[in-house]
Image 1 (spheres, rainbow, N blue to C red):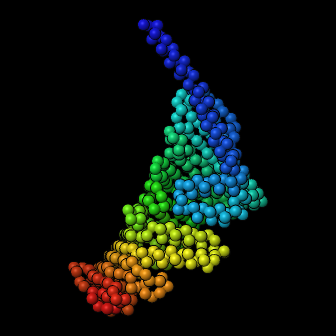
Image 2: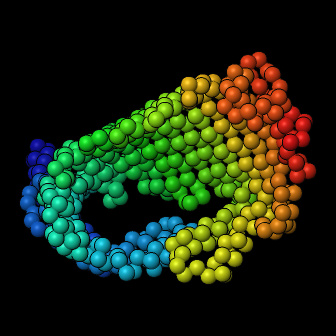
Image 3: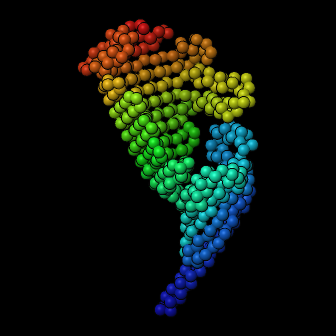
Length: 454
């Protein structure tokens, strides 16, 4: 019995010792497979050196040899995942045809691939930009000041990324190397800092993840800009099924005698497709502790803007989006038919109808030595299904609009002092506590405030 145990242990030991050999072979096979795919996509990939047995480190060089092929490959993959953007990707291909190769050909990255050979786990990849395109480098080499700035950045591998793959060989994390660099420009020093750049991904049915930046700043003579605590969370399935959440802790900008500071910024957006193929959008923007100073100062404690849109016809939105993109990216070759297609799409959106709600709140505004405590606005808008022409005045008949404007009574008095033309409007308000309330409604092609026609 003891000999059997020894035999089993011996097999396990031999297997463990041989495991790195088989893993190395598998990794090499995978690299060669990906290499062929990259070459076909206009990218040359070469393993420069390789070392290690229990764990391997491979140094490589990745060079774009054909920017056009690389662009076409990237855009084709993007269009396959996002069919609604196919028209846009085709236009990008067409409009970048002339400049794409000069912009990309010769761009070079170097890096390493590290992996354990005991288990076929996800490798760690380090990737650094070491050379821009041949044409761009030629221009830089002819400009002394550009050489002083760009060449050291490339030599020091300032743009370096640390990439982690998951068990399915998809990117799960990208970290960017911190930067703290002084750049000399015409006798002046510019300091550039970048700390805590991190992208985490979860690529399953949708593309989900978060991107964060701890701090980034630029400081020069009479100029300073800083952003802290950026976090962007997203869950993207399609153009019409996605959710985002952006938060910024602090933003500061100072230039000469201008100062602009923001305490917090929050942006949330949620787009969904309903069962009846209608789109629904909800968005909220919040900004806190704003300070602006030029000749005079402006301070604002809080500003909130909320937008809700529902019952938008998805097919018409897609048509309008594709038409607009075509016009925007092909402005020099716009035809009358292109304009007519966009107008038709916009008409379809208005004819099908939709609903929208807007809520805004502003508090603690100080401007020109005047204090405005709160301003709140609610707006409800509906475009009823109709057969009107977008160019005709009749379209206004399909519009239903109502809502409420609430102003602090003292704040309203300050507004009237600034603009006497508001006095007649102010008299229409209804007093509720410390506020003046204005209920408004648009009907029969006229605007009414608290029952009075304006």
